[in-house]
Length: 83
Image (cartoon, rainbow, N blue to C red; front, side, top):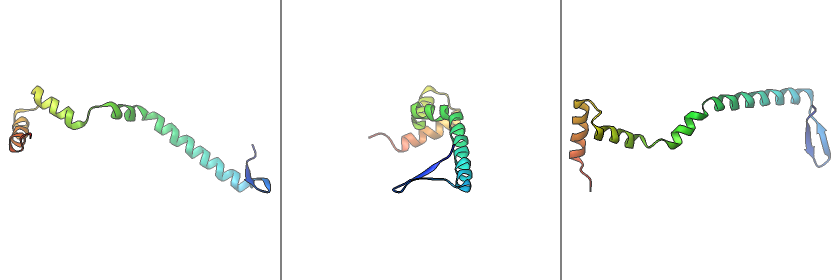
């Protein structure tokens, strides 16, 4: 398929070099789109997950952390109480 430059003088066909360069660009764009499609689920999940701080706080309150980590976190909470 011949590509053209649209100008006020009319359509001017691409040179062979311009066609080859555009073919490379199109192939690169397709590869980038394919790579993004493979990781779309990551972006979709990240947008809907609660903030990491909220996740960690829920784990702390559920008592899931090892005792030493829970003690460290509680010490910080005690040092800087709410409001």
